[in-house]
Image 1 (cartoon, each protein chain N blue to C red):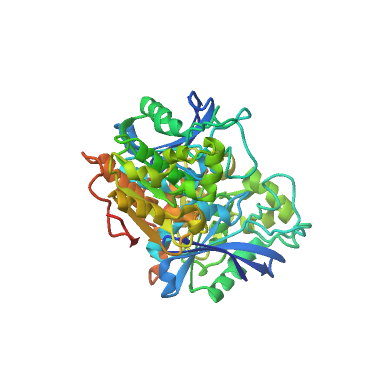
Image 2 (image 1 turned 90 degrees about the vertical axis):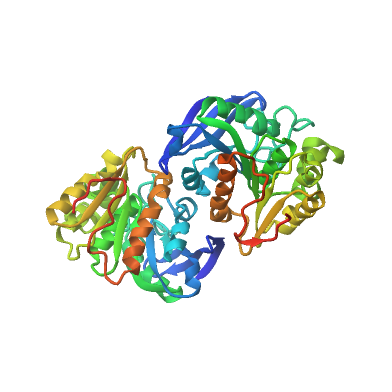
Length: 295
Length: 295
């Protein structure tokens, strides 16, 4: 593991590291923000999964999250969005291949050789972080769009692994929207049964752990009706008795201006769960924005 | 004037406008952040001048300034860094020509036809803003690197025009560093007397208005010794009895991670001057960071 960037930021350090991923079979970069408290003690970690076309850079340059991480004493880890390198399969278009790993383990060729972002994000990266940084094993996960999908799926599939989960503008029902259908057909093949393992609306039906789902969604998001459809998850969560708070934000779009506006509330939410004694089973903070929660 | 971008951000709007600049003789884009208070009343304006290679986008995507502007009720205006378009002269290298206007009025060809960023920033743009937005004529100015130079020069040359001025990592003595010498020789010609009109270290000697200068400078800035040399302005200000506070920030570099870390303090400083009854003649806020002030 090699540090390739280091920037002082809000009293801590915004770093980027490069390592050889055994899971992905390629060289990967990931960003780590170490708040000032990390000089003194081990801190919990919030994993951030970015959306289509992003690298580890987008979140660290545009979200303004470091201020809140420094305020709350939380390490931020932001991986890339797919395997990288000349040996890695790619496709035309921004929504398949590099920059579009969809945080799943591909089973079809040519993707299966490298596209194992689910295992990378859930297992390999946390093990690396907890072994090499002043990090505890208290984890939270969040993300945007494709990364919101990744965060919800990671938390729903792995009870006990995360103290809290949230998402901005997530793809909640990839099996039923164009982005997800294209990616899942390529990565997982035509059998839609196999898709259920990476579809939050399916996973919520049988989730063993009722970790509350916190979602912020811009009301003027250009992908809201065609690709995101958060009401599908709201309905599925309500049917399953799974706690979910969906906050519609009128006027906001799909951009990092939206994320920047509310990332402070998400980090406060995660910090409360991460620093608390118990997991965040007992309800999400209320009172912010337009709330139309499940329960 | 045409609005070409609009994004909801921290309860307000991050817009980008396009207009025909009479001063520059070309089409220009500039960014305007309207905080939520702008829906109810006219607000003062902080002008932000960006550094070499930047457009109006860098500050609005990376500085995280909107949060503080919304908190303090200040409009942010960020122009581009040079004239633009196919008719506009350019040069090899990032430090002359497009993206490198140095906020001066060029007198030499081929530059003189369009490179009049000083008049654009000081006169034309504020007139446009005050006529078309819910803006008062209370103005503040700040900037980074080349833009810090631009902000200092604008304030020092135009007594009464700004309520407050600050800079991040400014080029304080362009006549004596490579970036400035190259640009001034091209834009203004070989006569160094003419350069004094755009050199903060010269202007501070005779400034009619003792507007306090607030400067933040990263201690690990890769351009500190070669291009920035803030101690030259500190000495010139001390000799002239001009109030200056230079805050050295150990560990910080020249990037937007540095700006993001301290822009909140600058906006608070400007807001106090902009919302106050009197101009900010009476001392800069103390107590933050490593302070080695003039007086």
